Image (cartoon, rainbow, N blue to C red; front, side, top):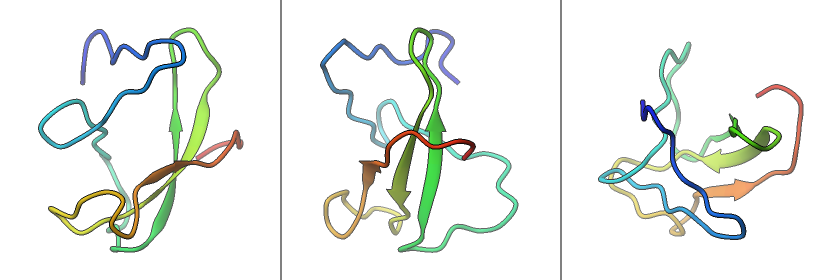
Amino acid sequence: PLADGVALPAGGTVTLKPEGPHIMLMGLTQPLVVGQRVHLTLRFKAAAPLTVEATVLAPGAEPGMGGGATQGGARGGG
């Protein structure tokens, strides 16, 4: 956990990667499968939650080579 979160400048982008800021899924009830699509709800300090869809990649795989996170639009739950 990052005590202060990750700064996301208005209109800007933040790259998440294993050696930098990243999202770690904890407490999963079943294993993730390469190619599986999962919905993640991102929560912000000063904005509404945003649900995104991400494709599970093999360890060490590069995003953009058959998957990665894409904005899925606002959805309930997740």
